[in-house]
Length: 310
Length: 248
Picture 1 (spheres, rainbow over the protein chains, first blue to last red):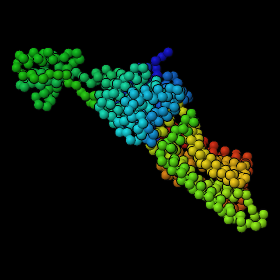
Picture 2: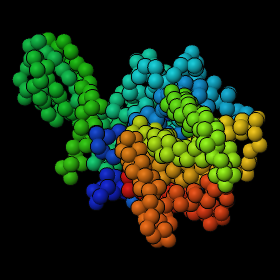
Picture 3: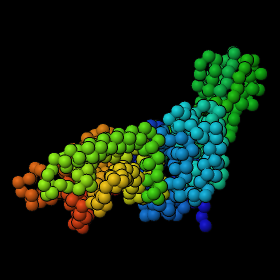
Picture 4: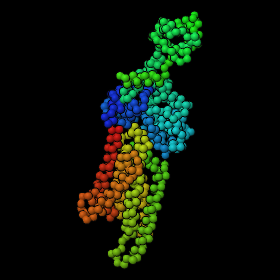
C-alpha cells in the first residue's frame, strides 16, 4: 500500500473567469508536514477549501487516501480535520459542549466521545476551560478550541489554515510541537505567513503565488536558496576592492555599509581562509567574517518575483 | 446524523435566551387567549337561547386558540428560522458543517428537524392546555388532535420556507423579513381571491389547506399539499447550499 494520504491532481479553480488557482498538483505522504506559503490572495485558502470539500474544483481531483472527495465525500471527509482561516466555533456554547458536538458530527463512536474530548482538550491546553463559554474566552483560547475541533476525531490528514494567529509565544511553541506530533503519525498541511515557523515545523514546503506553484521541495532545498555563496567581511583598514577581487574563488565584491564588504564566491571555493591570511599579512584589520545569510523573507520575495518576471 | 444536527440546533437555541424568551412569550400569549376563550364561552352561551346557536366548548375555545396561534406563529417562525443558515454564514461556521462527514441533505434536514422539535414543544403545550378543559367538561379529542396536527404541518411549512430564505442571505434580519412577507402573502392569497375560491391561485394559499384541519378533518390532499410544500423548500435550500460549494 502506498503511503500517500492526500493527492491533489491538477487543481484549477475559476471565480467568474478569473483563475484563483491554476493547475496545482501535489501530494502528501504519511508522517509528513507540508508548509504552504504564499502572499495574500495567492490562492492558499482556496486550495485548502478545495482539499476539504468546501469548494468544488473547476478542474482536477482531490483524493484522500485514494478516496475521491467529490465522488465519496462522506468517506473522504471523515479522514480530514480542517481548521479554516476564520475559526468556525459556536460562541454560545461551552468548550465541552462544542467539542462534543464536533466529535459527534465527525462520527466518533458515542462511547469514545468523552475520551476524545478530554484528549483534544489536553493536547490544546484547554483542560481548565471546559465549562467556560467560548464567547468569554480570549482570542488565543478561541483559536485553541478551533484547533481542538480539527483534531478531535484523530484524522489522517490535518489541514490547518494559519493555526498560530493570535496565540502567545508559549502557546505557539506548544502548538508547533503538537503539529510535529500529529505529523509523525498522520499528515499535516499548514499554511502560514510566519517563515521561521515553516522552517521549524515542516518537512516540505511549497510556495504559491497568483495561483501558481512557484516552489516545491524539501526544507533543505529552501535553505540552500537561503544561504547562497556569500561572505560578509569587515576591515578596519580596508584594501581596494580590486585586491579583494583577485583572491582565488571570488567573483564579485560589493561595498556594504560602514567598512563592511559582501564577497560573492564560486561554489565550494570559500575564500575565507585566504582572506584571513592576507589580512594578517597586510594588516587590513579584519574584525568580522561570517557567511552572509539572506533571510527567508528575501528568498520568498525572490521566488515570487522571479515568477512574475517570467 | 440528522438527529445529531438537530441536537446541535436545539442546543444553540436553548443556550441563548432567544429560545427561552420566544417559548415563554408564546406560551403566555396563547394562555391568555385560552383564558379569554373560556370566559367568553359562558358569556356567549348564556345569551344563546336556541339549541342551534350552541357550540361545544372544545370548538369554541379551540377555535379561539388555534385561530390566533397561526397568526402569532406567522411572526414567531421567521424569527426562529432566520438564524439557522444565515447566521452560520455570517459567523463563518458553515465550513465546520461542510467539512464534517455529513451530506448537505443531512445538514438541512437536521436543522429542519431541530426546529420542528422546538415548535412541537409549543404544540404539545397548546394541546395539554386545551385538554385541561376535560376536567369539568367532556371534550372532543379528535377535533383537538386534528387541529394540533394541522398546526404542526402549518408550522412545518413556515419553517421550510424560512430555512430557504435563511440560506439566501448573510443577514438574518433580511431572511426574517423576506420569509415574513412571503408567508403573509401565502396566507392571505386566499382572501384576495375571495370572489373566486376555486381559482388556482387561491389553491396555493396555506390557509385554505389548514381550514379542513381546523374543522377537525384530516384530508389526504391537504396532507400531500403540506408535504410537497415542505419538501420543495427543503430541496431548494439544499440546492442553494450546493451551488455555493460549486460557485464559491
